Length: 94
Image (cartoon, rainbow, N blue to C red; front, side, top):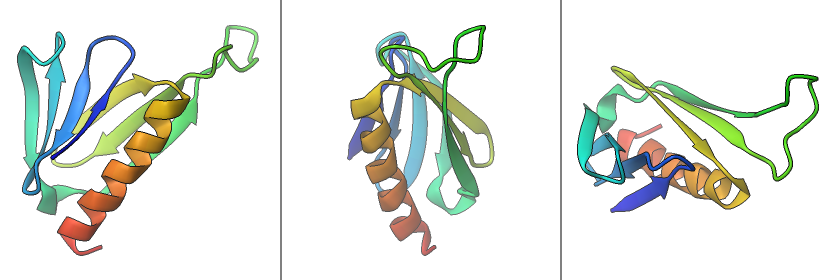
């Protein structure tokens, strides 16, 4: 089981068969999708109102499956998301 914890208490969890999004530090399950519905993901660096990168860096993650899941992570979270996506792709056969 892999879990990526975001900056605001949300998390995305991959258990081998499904990907789930939790809110409120894991107390509220917002969505759960079978791994076979994985389509794509994006990681975008957040910027300030003037277009400059935030300090420390923050990244918006969008995971497209049968529903969309989003999360804001720091540098360490970005590498954790990429590792989780590699596992999802392997399980989905992509």
